[in-house]
Image 1 (cartoon, rainbow, N blue to C red):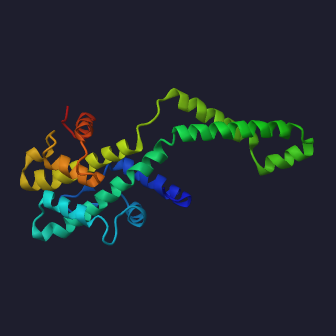
Image 2 (image 1 turned 30 degrees about the vertical axis):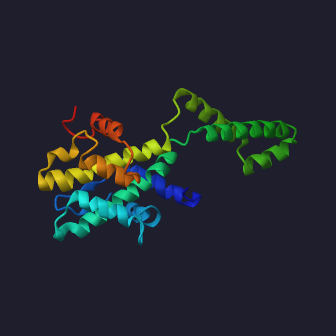
Image 3 (image 1 turned 90 degrees about the vertical axis):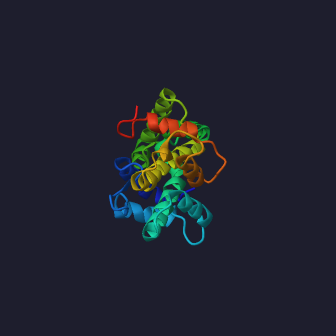
Length: 230
């Protein structure tokens, strides 16, 4: 889990990513990541370094088949793709923090605040004024009430692993489309099958070559992210 002091950076990166989802490639094949700060954050926290993921990177290179002059660029793109997938679960935690554990935590917090309010009401007026300067008790109670009300209106979000799977599919599509469809004219690389490059690369980026991601691939195409897809 990401450190608490890194969360503001991740929130900013998530907001930037929403504008350029999942990431873009300029025509010459060089990586065009959102902004420098976002790319730096991904490098520092989620991007594989050293000898990590070398097996996965080699398998991905074998699938994408870059020419020798572009192999280094392709390798770098794959490393950033792995970083994007690695970040997916934390992004989901930021976007949709609701879970059974968080619901229980909010309930316990609300109960504790309401007990504190009883004690607060027994304070002399002057001490209540001093307390209000130190802590917004009523605001905290309202926060818990509002959050509980909002959560009741929406279903529990999809699992963390499912979000990571979708991220792997999304990013793999971009890579496959650029390196195989655009450069090598291999349209079959992005069809809906479990045997093609898109599915194989998605599984590699996810971290499990045996996983079945066809449902997420179908959802990606139906989502309308790709112009002209019905």
